[in-house]
Length: 151
Image (tube, rainbow, N blue to C red):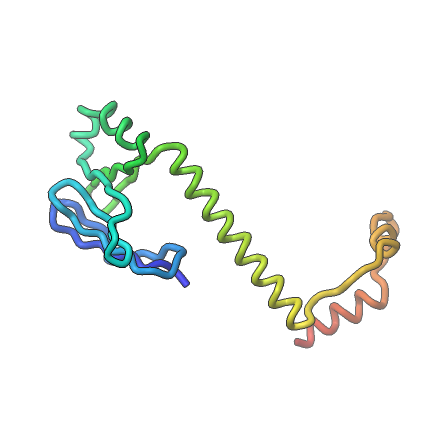
């Protein structure tokens, strides 16, 4: 189940109406002038600074410092082609969270396959035999593959 993100634009910035994230709770964003406040179940979780490219160019160091200290900066662009600047630590945490979510989804799929009897087990000797260059599938493997094709 994804996290539903609702964006409400009051300033000159426009965002997609909804986006999917990976948590299962509603996230509402309210604009107050150039600050964007995030609320999850009524609790403020993070503040985001929004700016235009011209302001970013003239105050780049300031906005980089803001991003480095944990506050993402939205750079608003025409046609809803906005960009977010965030610290390397925040970026790495996002990538790590995405990889963890993918891994957990893979584990869930594996558990489903195990529950549906869509797995095959091998002895250590069978695995050693598979390492040889002249290995051919055994009847056990052929039966398993045929069973999977019929399901």
